[in-house]
Image 1 (cartoon, rainbow, N blue to C red):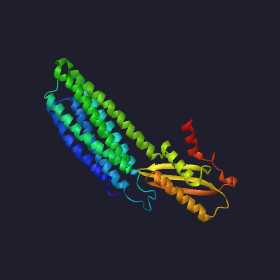
Image 2 (cartoon, rainbow, N blue to C red):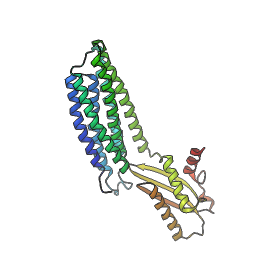
Image 3 (cartoon, rainbow, N blue to C red):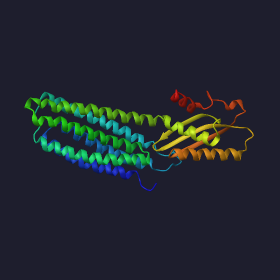
Image 4 (cartoon, helix red, strand yellow):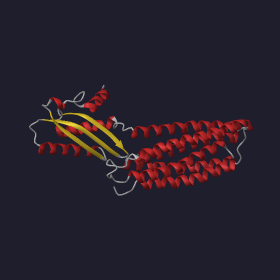
Length: 311
């Protein structure tokens, strides 16, 4: 893979700086708490981009004697930190909104401010689409989290513009609409923050791969070893873009070391053809030995999940 995933983070940081200037300019000329909430989220975007750059730089380091599984989990720290920053920004928005509830006021130069907000949304939208493409290419949770955060910023900004746009055609008594919209935006931001924290937590806790990927692993094993092959103790996890897979394969006791090794190598290649960035470990056991059946059932975790998925 020739290109570095870090280049997409540079796009994000550049877009955040541009939109930060536009949105704080919009807030400065309007004194709208709604536009302030939009600007606060962009400030979080910039901080998150810097976190993501540091995390990707660490995650891309090769394995060493102190980190034999590599540094891929660093990406989950970035995702969790971004979620926490979003929640902090939401609290700040709510605080500012409560003050505006107490002392409502009509924003000034509203049309200009809304146009600036729309321009910044266009910048974020283009950047997010580019980053989502990069996240798919590099299978990076950091790029995905940052891109989805930018898209959230886009939709909340559009909602803000539509909501505040109403105030261009309404009497001063509608000034209360400004803090109401800001509160709605804060709630949406909170939802995004919890989503990122949950995803980060799942990665750090070594959640198993999704059912769709387990199905591909099962298909690969049976393609190489036959439909009736027995295996169990399947364990999977993901660290950043790296997938770790291990299981026990039951073969006839008369199988030679060479033939067993050849079959395992074929299975590894087959799995790696289906899933990117895989590290596969296979433990061979004699099928005639009762001690080989040391799991709840042959097929183990994968068999249980696949059956529940088909029922």
